[in-house]
Length: 160
Length: 202
Image (cartoon, chains in turn yellow, cyan):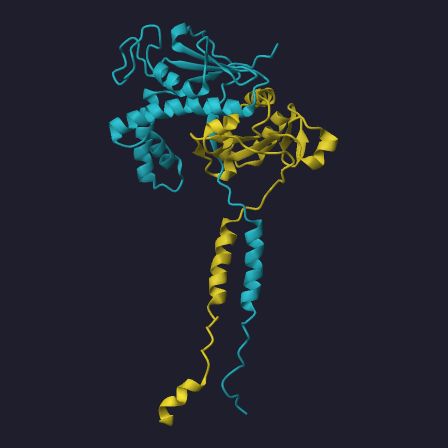
């Protein structure tokens, strides 16, 4: 009988973890490929409004971003609570928007310069006055394609 | 003396730890952004040379005041009804030249969808949220009508065809085919949404 009992003396065999690195590497590569490093940190409050008829912004290299909103709490002491424009990493006046667009446009490749979209990321509590001024500036530099960036959702939630 | 069993194996046990460390770094820094929003074209700065005369009945005026109330065609309107009113205006087909319109053919409303213009005017004090809601409803009115035509002509929704056309991953053969269809429908209901300069509140 001893012949048959031989295998029972050990405990449960350990689960092989040899494939763990493979799994982790797979995940790692996934996140490495989808990662987009943040290029500018937000200095304004940016709760976007909701809209249901949205179109996706394809091709990130063709988009310029303009942020508008109240300065966040740490900047409120210096800049007050009125909505401000943020271009790249600093606050700007309306008059600087045109120059910003021209500068950014010059940085892009030649063939992209005519197909750029300006994405307006505006806090939903901002006033239209400021937006209208920005739109005027954009018209002056012939950046006519704009995208009002929104969250996807029911548009009537904006009114509350 | 020959070595037995070849060179010693490198211990790869800590490989997982290193990979985990990298993984966590990328996990933390990742922002999977899918930006979406309402696409609009601003009017060019130079006005066209010739003054175009537009009949008053072909213009659908929408005014937003600083409290977010709507004045549509000189009367107060609830935001929820805006889409239906805009559709009724665009789809009217007053002069009978539009054979795909299903509207009332009212003489006092727009002649043809290609002539109908929506004019939007807002106050400087209007909140951006309200403005986006109004824009959304007006774009929605166009999309509803275009979807209807898309279903009638090609059995598919216009918005679905358009997003497939704009998606860079769609094969170019399908894209070319969709381009024609999208263009055709856009011509049936061209988006003529004009925005006046803002008024100052007084």
